[in-house]
Image (cartoon, rainbow, N blue to C red; front, side, top):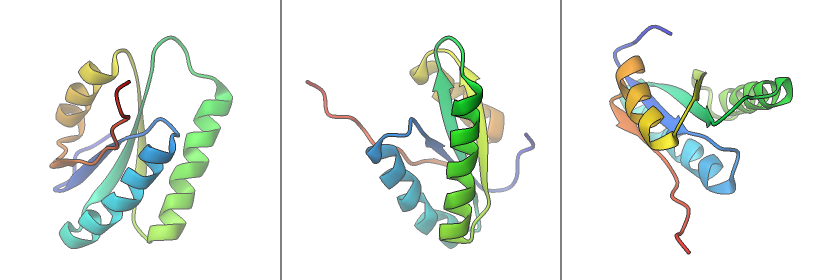
Length: 102
């Protein structure tokens, strides 16, 4: 994946909070002429179904927003992989939902 001048990274786990975060990122992307990158981090393996689901979600977001939405899937720990992804795609902004701690 090549870096562009403006990339917004959206960690995405299919939860309602990550969907809300992705939709919030549309505002920033329009303002800064940025591309949105959905980051999905998996621990062991991912299924063909997971790949198809996130691809479909990215296409839905593109249709909804009129913006370019790419996908990045990385294996490992979410905290570490967010940092790695920021460097990998030269993200200028991270937009993410936070799950409440119990």
